[in-house]
Amino acid sequence: MAPNVIATDLSSDSLPMPKDLSNLFVPSMRGPIKSAFKSVMGNPTLAMINMAGGVPHPNTFPILQLQATVKAQKSTSTTRSESMLLLDKTRRSQTTESLDELLQYGDGCGADSYCNFLYRHTQRVHNPQYADWGVIASCGNTDSIGKAVALFCQPGDSILVERWTFPGTLSSLRAAGVAPVSVALDNEGMVPEDLDRACREWSGSTPPRAVYLVPTGQNPTGATMSLVRRKSIYAVAQKHNLAIIEDDPYYFLQLPEFVAPAPSTAATADDSINGTTATVSAAASDYSRPQSLVPSLLSMDIDGRVIRLDSFSKILAPNLRCGWITAPRYILDKIQILNETTTLQPSGLSQGLISKMLNEVWGMDGWNAHLQELRTVYTKRRNMFIQMVEKHLAGLVEYSVPMAGMFVWMKINFGSAAADQTAMPRLLDAMKKCGVMMAPGMPFSSNGPSPSDHYLRAAFALVDVEMFEPALVRLAQAITGISGRAPTASSDSVKVSLIVPTRTSVTAVNSSG
Image (tube, rainbow, N blue to C red; front, side, top):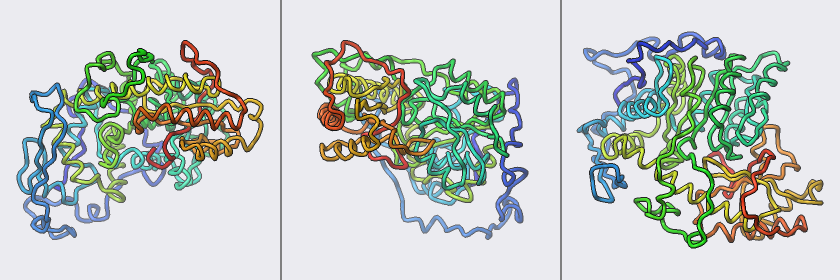
């Protein structure tokens, strides 16, 4: 792939430049950093006969053409349910590189057409409030987290994180020798007063330089920060000069208020709920109205202290292994070097497919229609799942209705067995015997696992909705067998717990979930 540049802002003359936070970088990231080749040879010019790199000739690439059929979006001009895209070995299309370019080694930024679309998307959705920002390709948010943390933390350092957080992040921190410092959560996510307390009362030799958080559809609790909460978190970060790592893979899965399905449709699952139709069914019209999204931390960042991590994993497909990072240009320059010493960039085939689909087949309007369709599907799934929780788990669990994402975080009410340190392990064993799996809260704990972590994270995204009820009936049986308590009669309205939820999931816990 031909060398390219980070898609970056060139037109914001009236906006301020970002603050220079390079003093927060670990020593190895300060100052100019170049690859070994570039530091000696510089960049080749067109007049040079370039024999420096171990780069194969594209004539040896056996893939001549790549053709894919993708869903058409209602907002596009076509009336068909499918659209074709084609990538050719040597010919560029209107916006997208040729296969020879996509399959060749590139730099640590990503394909031009891929990054340029994501720059326009970011500008349209988040409209950063400072100049000289840009986007760079990533291999998804797990990849991005490790690189963002590496800018600000070295072995022996600490980073501020939510009380319950993504196990993949905790694993990355452990592998890097970085200690997570737990900050309290409530039903709106990280508590700004506790973040401020953690910074004020810091007694370590090296003060924290960064805070990591998931502000929307938080994993595992499902909490979503309000606009007021986000502003408060940002103000604390300004007060203590923290970089904010905004991990936001569920941002476009924001959901409206919970509305119980009507009795005539509550037990019915059409294909649009199970995610198999090309268009949203007429029955989904109540869920498909455009909804305003809570502004991101990036959108209110006037200092350039937010490193925003986005991913296609939850909004296109996980194993495309594609995402993007948005930050000031000087920060992206460092991440580019980290990319060039690790992953280089995502698969050229994945970038090419995404670029062609978003730039030429769907366009920005089709992309927005796809995101709205996802919210429709997840809203209906969430509502049906909550209805089944109320029907079968009333009195057995405490929970909050998620306003984004794909998780319901439940605290198990063990009753008189709550003090029993074996209650949670026994419950997990009983669930296996009953034939239902959810993620226990312990792996999500930034304080380390404890037998008193009586939480489960249920993921309502994958299984067919017809399985919601049998899954929760089995869970109720397992809980009753440990606690001796039977479910109470279903209430007329959903009880929203005031207790901070902990995580558990219907799928096995792994680094991707």
